[in-house]
Image (tube, rainbow, N blue to C red; front, side, top):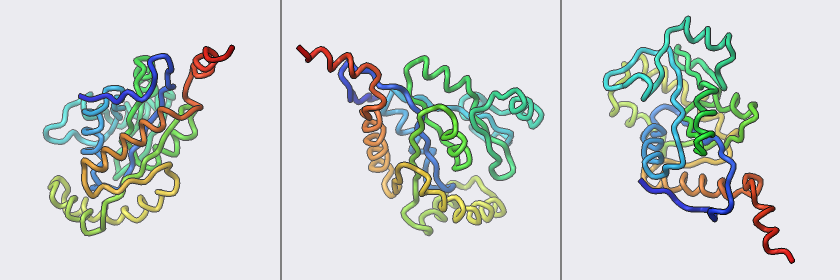
Length: 214
């Protein structure tokens, strides 16, 4: 596991949220996994969901699987930072998840859609949004087919939503095209490291600079 040192040990960067969004099949899950393996200063926010668990998925590792009544209870108790309905199922991010990682001095990675991103931006957290596009519509269709986990009905639903999902790209800070996974991940790493150097996030920069004053 790699970690890029972008700051002096004397200067600390305020932690922030990194949102990856894309139409289904654009590869954000693969990108997330590779990014996490390369940067130990990033942790993944695991969402709650009401959708059924899939083969090879693990509860509390891939998602926190809950039923509808539990999800509604969490909403009523104001436990979510954001939540949304996607393909008939509910997804949400627990506030305590992000708070825990920030206490560990980690930046937090979100694999969520545009609805969740909009809600996160309305919170008091610092959020950087990255929208991932496939290289072409043909590539997107092939990727959805090749992963082989959707029924023909689900495939049709996903393709019908692609235009709507892609229409939200102007709301994001960055757009990256995932033609090559390694190049795409490298570009996102560069974005993250640049954001860590943003002057407004450098918490003790003034005291560091004051050491150079007479």
